[in-house]
Length: 400
Image 1 (cartoon, helix red, strand yellow):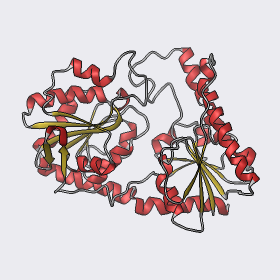
Image 2 (cartoon, rainbow, N blue to C red; image 1 turned 90 degrees about the vertical axis):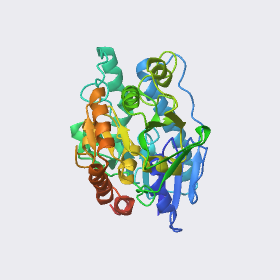
Image 3 (cartoon, helix red, strand yellow; image 1 turned 60 degrees about the vertical axis):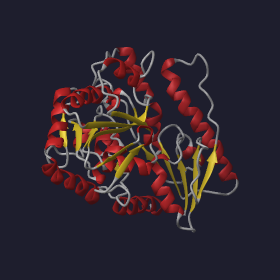
Image 4 (tube, rainbow, N blue to C red; image 1 turned 45 degrees about the vertical axis):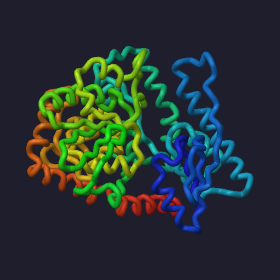
């Protein structure tokens, strides 16, 4: 079969399903993207250079124009395929503008849209931190959903990775969206009691015998509770002289608003009294190093706004981390307090500290929680099950 994927950030959420489909030599895997930084065997990339939004663009129209630009560029490459006589059997695109004109070019080809997040000013991320949401802000967020609504109308079926993310979309469209988990590779993400993590610049080797509190996310930002984690880390380090804090991720903001000046890492380091001999910023890690870090973790902290659930949290569960997580909707879909993790209120620093200390002081009790975390992923989100089902779902759309 011929499958056309579309995503700005190749290969992103489609990495595993596209690569698995590419193993079959009878399949033709095409991928339209603007990311030319990497390639995967068996996947034929069609790359465009994105155009900037026009200067002086209306603030309400900025995101929409950006999506239209990506949609037009993707459409140009799709038209070139059509002119060469290449008609995909199914199109599977992330709903970030590129799908916008696919049904105009291939009206009879099933279109699957990956729907990640629908912006709402109440009851999710945008009002979680108490920020002021006036009528102008609310109207802009509503207009930012315009291209999503176009995709919801044109697609044959939508996909969201979690029930929580699906629930954010308008009720009249939710029946059109199927929950298809991204899945976790449990052959790589698994416990290893003999794991080691080396911090070369400090000549330090950490193992499961050490007291290690870990934090791993894409960016050090409020959306993922970085300030709250650092405040908790300060208290932990003062209470526990043998504890180490290891932070993986970029000193950047990917979700929400950056500071007018400086970064949140700089802000927290200036604000807090930290023993920097026991605080280790290790940057963005290669995947095997990231797994090793989680394997030696004594307590892994995952905090999030009511927003998209991070892949890292599910990886950590599969690895058997003792997770201390925020007690809110995206987390509650996966973690039950005292069963497969420990939960605390996002803004309750002392509560977070108490849960971390409970994990550190009760390692024997935590073994059951760690086993249940692994069990949750293996039984519900293991690649061995989710990937074949994902492919069957794609094939079913072609048959329809």
